[in-house]
Image (cartoon, rainbow, N blue to C red; front, side, top):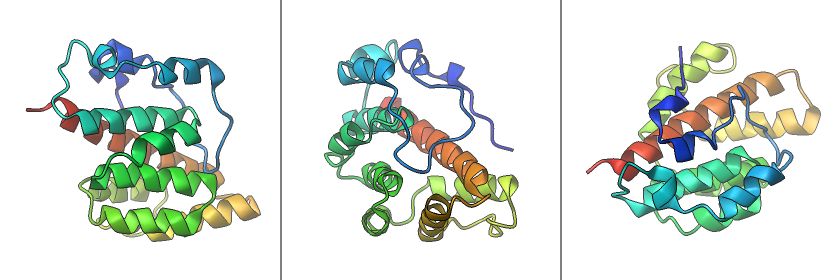
Length: 183
């Protein structure tokens, strides 16, 4: 069972993480109140009292927060500047959400095998083992195809896929945060 505890993050970041259980599979509706805060976010202040040791991973957290609040354009601007597998992962999610599925697959090819994939496969299997039968190997391309079909056809799988999208966000955000602050 996957549990996300936002109290593990500094107040400046935790206050920007909503308690929803699903993420949008499409562009969603931008949260304009939080968007303004995210536009002027000073990473050093948001991470305090932790010290940022890897700026790219702190920026990955920022990209993730922007996605969480459906600020896809701004998230895109941030993630495309992060030339790492994690930056490509955030970039791929953004393109998947905007409905550019082939471009999302391109960015996931750049991700390669990410450390988050194993935990994501297990968590997705726990959410719906019929959609995610392999609890050891995550296939981002199949997930992209599932999201595309669900968005296009408004299938009954939308809530399950949205829950998996939230777990994906949580795992990747946690990974990005830990890498940002660890020495």
